[in-house]
Image (cartoon, rainbow over all chains, first blue to last red; front, side):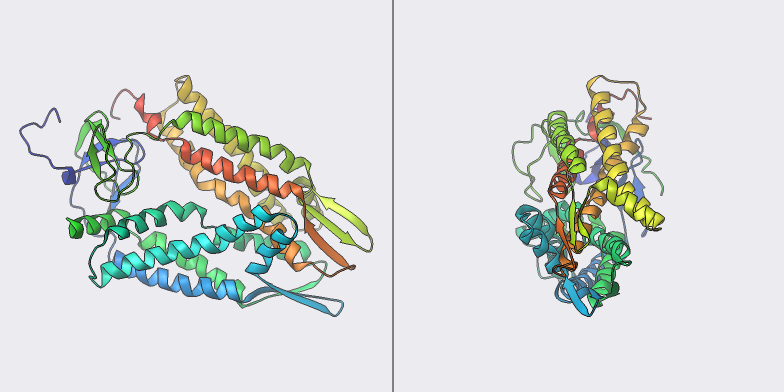
Length: 212
Length: 210
């Protein structure tokens, strides 16, 4: 710390940009404001209001939608008196049975396992923070995992895939969407709400303060 | 949106610090211990960033060839057997009148993967050879690659849904083809490639703060 040797600086006073490593002094920003990197413009930290409460609410709602979307049928087809309806798990097992074992496992992970894991971990961490149940080291690991998983949770992409399939076979048979279709839509909405409410920096700060 | 107006005018690395990639906590270099806050391994820059980027990109590129040549879907009906590749699926959609959906599938399965190969390779080459390209342009390109890659999985899910739904015995049956395997592999490895590319390398060669 060359220029400021007269000033005592602790790690907590500084923040480095995740995208370009540029070092800034941490400043107190207004509620709802966002600090961005002076050099590259990437977000440094935010102060979103009621982040823990809202993220907790959205992840719990997400878990409900996810359970519904996995267990109920999302598409039903009728053609010439034969009808069939499928759930998300049927789509996965179609790949497994079609001699595409690893692709079935991958799809199961992307559509079901990773989204559930992410929502579950987030809800658990937020619940413990919200109700002041004490900070455990495992919460840091849980949050780390939840953030790492984010790009790999693809429920919303699956939803687009369902819509494309609907269009593709609408000429062949009459189709109707089932309850899981709407649950998937709910899941997409709650997932985007989580990214609106979740204030990464504040949550990590909370975890630091209580564990120190 | 106000930018933090106080900076030190140097990077964390130049100040002898490393930022934890997960929780953002700062550590003194050389960071030999795991992050004191979240327990992750602390690295100032991602390990072997360019080598890993190239390795994953090449696997993704190699898998993209069979993904387009082999059929992704086999349809059996009393009028005969047909098989669809990624491209013929797009054409069939467009011919059936669903132009908008055809465009969505074309973008997800062709435009995004190809754009990603080109952008990642371009970024990696520009870092290798120190091309004169503005840091801001490269920063935007990098953000794009991280954001768009996952949407290529649409076609995989379409095949899964159709194969599960269209099981009407001799009347009409759809089975997944080997091409979709290769396509999913290509998407996954290109995603790994994008996350291996450390955006901080783009700025490490930059001269001034602005």
